[in-house]
Image 1 (cartoon, each protein chain N blue to C red):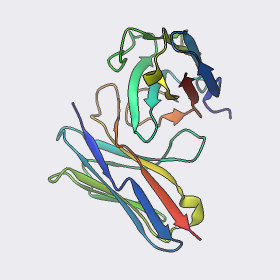
Image 2: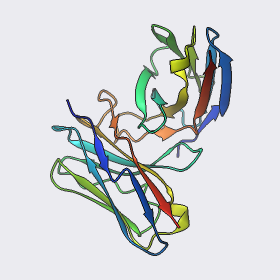
Image 3: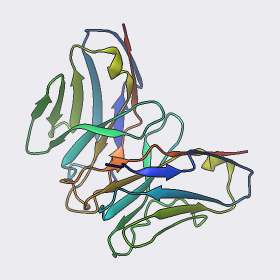
Image 4: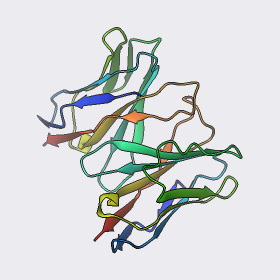
Length: 113
Length: 115
């Protein structure tokens, strides 16, 4: 089955800096890659996603890049703000099936004011 | 509108007892998923319901775990003879349909502690 590795487990940055979280996956058939943000005491919330036919996608301060050859995908947050502090999860999915994601272990992002 | 709700928010139980966790999906959502989140870990898929189709139970860790769903509404996850390793946050999610075109909306979770 699919295996998703996520790094780093903890990331501490100063407000205004950029943050990058990286994931690798094992199943080359996976073709959909969502990113979730989980705030304390809440369920995860989808923040951005990318499909395998696209190399990069941006939404304001958030971007995701995908390298299918290397089976890597990354989340980039620019101009970080304290409210970006949360746990971020990547996932990999083989679409066309039951849409069961395999999640990474999460990255705790701390943005210091 | 109302999101996914789960109850209870916290549950403390003694080892060996049975527990029931409830999920109320967003109205009209035909797909419902249960996940387990252990401390410091990612989400583990447990079971998934899509409409009236047979549920996908491939993620259930043992036969102590079961889940039911009444039509396209409430779902209950039952853990029998709880063990300490069952301690985790149990998350429920729903989506309009199953498939990558349909976002999964998560509830706040039930934190289960087995003493």
